[in-house]
Length: 184
Length: 75
Image (cartoon, rainbow over all chains, first blue to last red):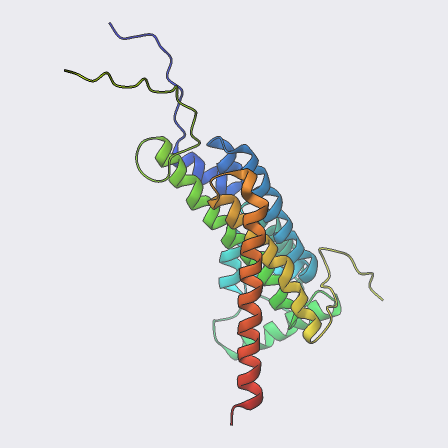
């Protein structure tokens, strides 16, 4: 007859990945490393928003800075909020009849359209130019890459806790082992 | 004149060498998150962060000095 002893549920690696991406630090909290999760949550959020404070709403620029944008999206909910804010501004500007619809890629019309968009951004004092753009995107991008490392760590720990691979989870103290009795 | 709003308008940063001070908070952030993930005991975290921060600053200063020497004295 199977025993009725309850077994504590193991963390699911996929859920750890999803939580760690969506809310930085939540993956560590999920696998039982609460204090580490809080530190990660505070630091990654602070670094990302420091970048946005330096660079303004155009720090996350999907249209012109793809690689930085990919790095920034690893901050999860922070990145999604930043993207949404930037997209709102971009949509408002590009809906202007003076700018018009997006033309064919690498055409002369595309270049002149981009110049018009830059002019509008400049008029609103939100255009991001060197060297402020580098500093702002470095902060926001590094926050994303740090969270990528935390995502990997949370997943590996969750797999280790499930007995698959990786570093084992937090250790609990074991009772002292009794000395072996020597056999004659 | 348009009013400046934080998180909306970009900041006016100091131009030149003074901007390099902005590397310091970024290094602190990297050191804290990295050591939070890697350390075995949280009680040793502050010491490990300080050690890593020292290594990072020393490395950056060395790199900066080497690049400055190359720029100044390269024929």
